Length: 269
Image 1 (cartoon, rainbow, N blue to C red):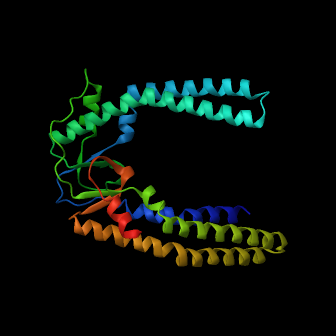
Image 2: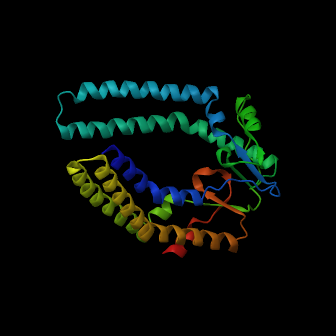
Image 3: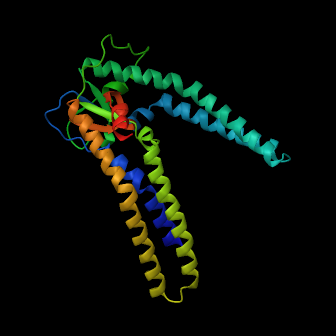
């Protein structure tokens, strides 16, 4: 059953992965000089962020001990209520501790980007070649005395756009396609699982798994691939109409860029 469940997880994630990949191509254009990149992991490694994370970890451990003590003699309903209360406490502490640090980092990124006349800054993980790496400048600014000064000007128009993949996934027809595939997969899991219980030889098991995988691949091609193709086409059409040379997922935009999510979702409705 390990092969079956692993394959199921891969198949269930196929749509999300494919849709995500179309929004995160590798950046390699040498004729674009207004794109910056930053190593967010390097910023997170700064002492102030490390100290904040340590503080949050310790607070989380403290809450866990309190929850364990209070939930020991509580009913299941009371335990669920306690769990929500402690989760909210942790979320509140996270906002209080990390919020000012993230805001300061955002101002530093905007300040450096403005000084270099960058229209957009992306996560360095998606950059293969090109762009200006501003990690060192931002790190120096955050390590200095005093607060970074916000830029006085707005970013110049960018040729890099971004889409909010979660908003696209939430569209009724996209969600319907995902739900249809997941229901089919669940039925196939049960059917294949029952067949595997009765399999007598390795050859029998291999044949069952082969049929199972083919059924999922066929269903994926019938239900998910059309939505992926439509999404790609909608993004390409909007990007061309706005003169964009690159579109990435919103999660990879650190500063600037043009949000085309509403235009793309309008085409997909």
